[in-house]
Image (cartoon, rainbow, N blue to C red; front, side, top):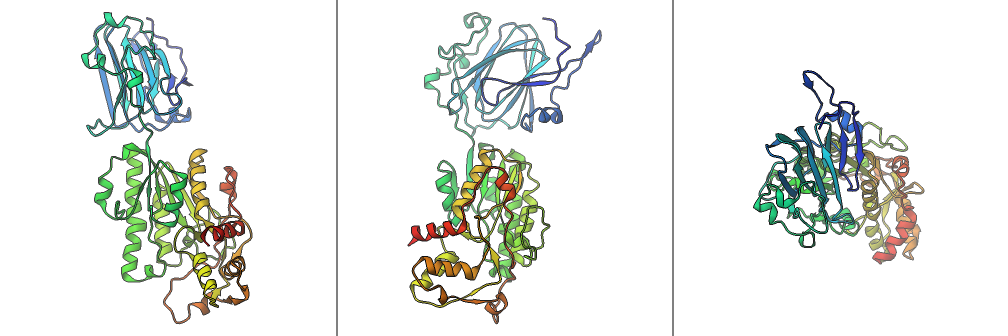
Length: 466
């Protein structure tokens, strides 16, 4: 077959999601030819994912009709031909609606194909001295899960150019199961760190198939925990684990604990994500700001007042180095656990008349809203970066919210005594707090996410927890 030298770089989607056929320019003259087999910048511009290859393999086949496959590995593969020509067949062996879908094509040096994780790969040589080459983004491991399909499967019904009874096939390939007996390869897992927190509990309802870990099961401050996982089996890590004891963080012991959980552990997370091409969702805080701006947008520079805010700002900066990341910055979180609303409801039931600060302003953020927003960002494949997220609606002070809790639970809102932050903490050791915590929601709204009005959310929350 005469090699085509007139192709231009182009990517074509196939009937199998994520399986992309590429035309490669192969300029040549009487001396031979040249091609850029893998050119990251150009291929990313075509919309291909960043493969991040760690290994380059070559399989040389000296005879026509050499047939190999059908093998699905838990990594991505970029297949091309250096010399000769092949008939390639790919079968989707992943869980999902396209399980069993087949695509075939001939490859020579002017064509390549990106084979996503879980898609079965096979080929048959059509010319002697064929050099089949492929890049992969993980190393072979005996602990990894592999999936195989028989080359002669009747359901896939691959139209091999040379009959299988006339070619060289290994006994191992001949023994692979039929499609009806194949266990589909599951998708990469989602891991949630901090499963017992308010957000962790809310995430369980939104990500029922995710893996949830508590501090006892996965101590984010222990380097050995990070080394114990096969991270290539994961696709997303949602980091809902953090040190959040704002006042305790100002003590010597608390300062060390805050930096360990909010910074050192986040560095381990970022290292795992970069090395394994993972998507990270990291929860940030309004405490990264000093609260002097009336409304905080995503471009505002960090200006934390206390240790907790400093550690959260440092963690955000680290996560920002991960190519695929979402920093979800939030404030005044209310969920299943100890929080301001539950405290006020309990005080109301006991007839208490508490003093509540009236010069700190913001909006409540319900953990259910955060969980929905995270799922939304992942589902719409939003642009990586930072997204402010609170519940929506009227900005209010803590004292106003306390009054609404009293009113909604049938108690006198006049029992709340508004006081300044300075007066409330007089004589007590406390961390400095931003007075303005209102977050601009325009960026996440532009992705199509609609946040709950926090007054509506408050009434629904009290009805559920009463």
